[in-house]
Image (cartoon, rainbow, N blue to C red):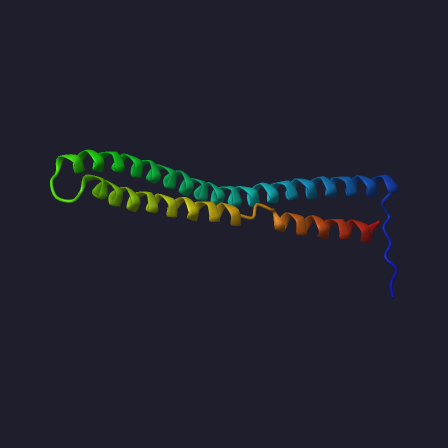
Amino acid sequence: MTERRDDRSLGELFGDLVGQMSTLVRKEIELARTEMTDRASAAGRDAAMVGLGGAMAYAGLLVLLAALVLGLIEAGLDPWIAALLVGVVVAALGGALIARGRSGLANADLTPKRTIESLQEDAELVKERT
């Protein structure tokens, strides 16, 4: 087995180590930033679903009021029954959108897994070299 020989001084070796560690930290920060941006945009879409669901629920309230007015003017079905049917359908749609958005937000995993794995590998590499 051949013996590996390095003619650099301890100061040079330490300088190289510091430079490599600095580069490594910068790359890890860049990876974490990229990973978190991707996950945050997915969470933003789910938050938009919650907002859309809230708007639909508000529209349901407005339809309930309009149906009440129109139901009182129209003849036929009792006005309160017509208003109740229209309002329940729109409110149910809004509730479904809110539930879908909330479940998406609850399932969103914002942990930067690749960054954590890479940091653990880096720590093991540093332990091996020291």
